[in-house]
Every structure is written in structure tokens, then in C-alpha cells.
Length: 387
Ligand code: SAH
Image (cartoon, rainbow, N blue to C red; front, side, top):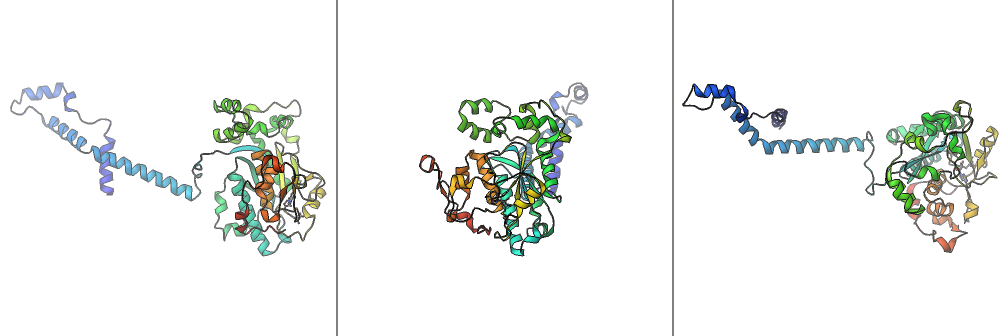
């Protein structure tokens, strides 16, 4: 069949110029006149034969193109399966919108964990990745303190799958330095110009909208709720694409080199409560699974470094019978669901497993968020939730 294909390839290469006896005038007329019994010259015969061959091969050519097309599709699918190409968009063709917020998992806690806790943490980090990857509004994700047993596990047992993760920055640096790197990533090449964004009153809402095309007007005229949904479908915003057009110029201090990144270390022990996620801010999650043996560990780490801390507003939206120290992936997912809904209550009820007996305190009857999604099914993923 290789031969056939080569033959066909040759015949296709002449496609643009198939022999056409009728178009050949002067030379053939002269020959025909001097040779009455055979009105066609040798070269005319040859051309006619070629023409006939060309016609006869028509269906073969069609078949050849079909095979080539199939081969190309197969190559693409294989590359996607191997993670060399981005996977095809989900069937809903929902395109995530990248927003300028960073989630940084501080994985510099290995010495505090037992082997099985490291395994659990690795699963949680994987879950964070897929939750962010498939989110309607996706943040930038980073892992600091990358190395040690976690890296070994990702490379070994987990077969190096992380190599094909998109949009995650793996950093050997400690969390503070890594937060600076994430800051640079969020701001892209625009640098200090983007500082103006910090003054944006709408916070992240500004970045959830599509930046160009007619869908923007459509979405906006359809009201805020559907604008949010439309924007998710409309455009996939690459970082710098989304940053360029809409960000107000900073009125002062446009030198990025002299600015410190916005960092908030998340900890259930913090006296501060998170109300919103702010643009160009890196939220650090302590990458540790310890059944809370090491109480206040992350809180102390942040305080020692002079970095602000905050807890998620659990108490304000839910009553929880068990303790409110959550797993890494739950903390991450709550933030992702907040980006999606703009409502902490909804975010919590979508994420916190029912067996924690989380109940919405406020707005319980009014918005019916409780029971919107059954989280029980998510408990069998080996995550360590009984912290
Ligand atoms: N013994 C550890 C517990 C870590 S839980 C400690 O006290 O530091 C893993 C991480 O999830 C925490 O470091 C924190 O970043 C985040 N986290 C858990 N519960 C949280 C909450 N209620 N609010 C904010 N962050 C939380």
C-alpha cells in the first residue's frame, strides 16, 4: 500500500497541470498535416493517455486524501493523549478565562509529614491542578519548594504526568521568592503599567469579561448573570491578551522593579477573614497534610516573614460541626468556586463534603445553594479530609 500511496502522491503532484491535448495548438497541427493517416502525434497520444489515467485515478486520489486526513487526525489525537498538544475542548466547548490571581502551594513541609501524608498531599495537588484547569475562571497556579519525595512520586509512581500539566509553574524556590515569580507571571511583560489594575474598583469582575469581539456586547446586554456565563464561553484569554486593552494606566509608581508582590498566606489561624480575591495577588496555601499535629504552623511561617494572613470566611457562611482546617485542594477549590459564583456560601457548599455536616447559615432558604451538588461522591479519592 506504500507503493500505491507513492504512486498517488506522484499523480497528485501533477494535479495542477494535467495534460490537456486540446490546448496544444501549433506544434500538433503541423505534425498532423504531414502525417494524414494518424491525426494524433506521439506527444498528443502520450498526453491523451495521461489525461485518461488522470481521470481514472480520480477516486484513488479522493481515497488517498481521506487516508492522509485520517492519519493526521490520529497523529493529533496521539499527541493530545501524550500531553504534547493541549486536549480538545470539552464537549460543551466552554473556554476557561484566565484571571490575574495566583494560587501558590507552598510544598516546603516535607519534614513534617509521614510517607502516607506525602502521598495524600501529592493527590491533593493533582486535584488542585485539575480543578483549576477545568474551572470557568482559572487562576495562575504555582508550586514552590518543588523537590524531594513529592517530586520523586510525581516522576516515578505517577509516571511523569505532571510534565504535561499546562499553566503550572514548578519552582524549587521557597514560597516568598516563588510568590515574586508568580507576580511577574501575572503581570506579564507589561510590568508596572499593570499596577493601575490594583485600583480597579470591581476587583476581578473586570477580568472575567471577554476583551474583544461582538460577544462582549451581547454578553453585557444580557445582564450580569449571563454575562458571566457568556464570557466563559466566548474567548479564551491568554494572559497578555487580556491584560493589554483594559487596564488603566497607573497614575504613579510605574516602575515594576521596585514593587513588592501582593501576597496573602492562607491559614485557618489568621485573625483576618478573606472577603474577596483581589487582582494581582498571590494566595499561598500550605502544602501539608498533618491531621493538624502541627497547629498554627503556616500561620507562624507567614508571621515570621511579615506577610499578611487570612482565613476563608467559613464561620460567616456555614456552621461546621468538625474543625475548620481544610485540605489543600478544598481551600483551592473554594477559591475557584468563588471566582465562578462570586458567593462564598455557594462556593463552600459546592466543595465541603456533606459528611462534614456543613450547613449554610445565612440565605439558607433564599438561594437554595445547599444540596446543589452532591459532594459525597468525591470522598473516595484518597484525600485526607479528616484533618
Ligand atoms: N497544621 C497545618 C494545617 C494545614 S492545612 C497548619 O496549621 O498550618 C493546609 C493548608 O490549607 C493551610 O496551610 C492553609 O493554607 C489552608 N487552610 C486550611 N484551612 C483553612 C482555612 N479555614 N482558611 C484558610 N486557609 C486554610
